[in-house]
Image 1 (cartoon, rainbow, N blue to C red):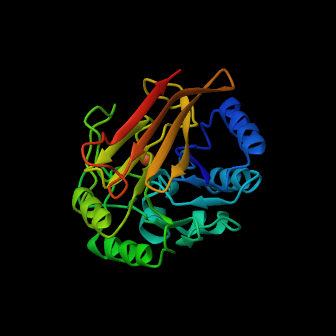
Image 2 (cartoon, protein in one colour):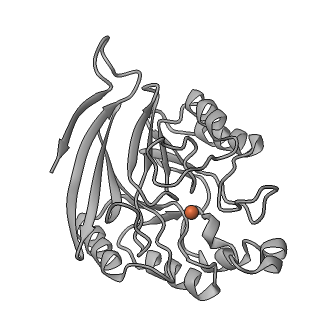
Length: 272
Ligand SMILES: [Fe+2]
């Protein structure tokens, strides 16, 4: 099983060379699926959302999408209020947007973006108890042995070393509840910064980099996920430098259930 995780494409200020490199990568590797965790546009314009979805549909793999905070009409107060999700819903035809169950994986998408909020920074995310319960219920439908994945735009647990500070409301408690409900892998974006952390050896939390010109401290990047053994997840961070994909690191993590007593949770890491 091989999945490619992309995020923060930001059509409108996309990095065209990075997108071309991803197209080639997917074409050559033929992953089982591509997962995109939102911020596919810059300003939530219909043209940006249409172009982003058309690009995703043209990839040589099935694509699953969940939206981000930039995918609402960003600078249009009326649009945010009256029709925040209309444009992306029109654009996303042909992409997988609901929970996805196969014999190999169950993926529960959760929209953590909000069109408006009772706080100053509307860019930040939130996950409600209702959304958490729905995602947990989806994970219960997983086939035996299927990898249970939750995808969100905002990281539920914000890494301390992230280049931007923030908090996802309800995120930490949702992370715990979903891990208790069997979630093994959390995929998110928003930070434009790659991060991989274990949550109590129960689950792996992965944030991937951006494919836009809005890079923060590191080049455009994405993540490739493999499952070499039932309780092991391998995460390969790929950087795109001058239009060329380069493996930046490959790390393997063993999740609870497969670890022998005293075994390190992180099996080994390779930095290239
Ligand atoms: Fe974002």
